[in-house]
Image (cartoon, rainbow, N blue to C red):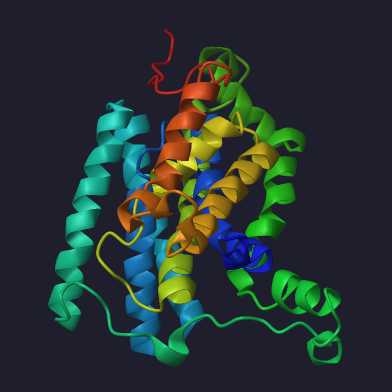
Length: 322
């Protein structure tokens, strides 16, 4: 049985699975630190995935696809901000409504433009391909070092490296920049921040702008790296898993990233378990294996929800004191 498990493959797959959640979780971190519940991560991911794939296919340039994905995700984030911040709407309802609307709209547009059952054509050369690190050929045959350098550290797309590079950057912004200080103040006590001269609405809109940019990379990664096309509802609940990672990480960048790696690991393990015969059990049905990430989600939420401390003003619309 144990011969069927390949630890090296699981670790590499973990690195490749994590960026989808990392980008979305860091996006949610900015929004929720400002006091906005970001249930629309799923919708922003889907919108960016579709537009990135469509533009990349039309131009045969994946980077133009990424830029287009940034634009549509930011537009959705600002719309979400208008409803939740300017109009003081219910943030949970706004997020769910955007998710439902975008799920249907991307399918309709994909069918209208490409007529392939709600998906885009295969991107082919318009995908973001893996980067080969310098000197990979020289060390490829060296035991462990070859695997570590060429497959674990190397052989990933630019978005993978960007995801991991953003972790310390976001940490510095949140805890060591003036914007991060205003962001945390607005999320904890917006009335005190307003009394100190901080514009609560402007800070929250800036947080939503950051969320839109970061979440777009998650959608672009789905279509331009992992699959090579857009498919209806291809985000497959990753936006909600990213929110779970945010709770797991107690709204802190480094711990949130660890939560994303944990979910990435279990997703990779799920693939390895398929087809394995366990003593006394036999082969586990594929439908049960697919439940693993969601079972872990329930366990994490049940075990950590009481211990996690969310920003105090999260979900509460700000009404300026008179």
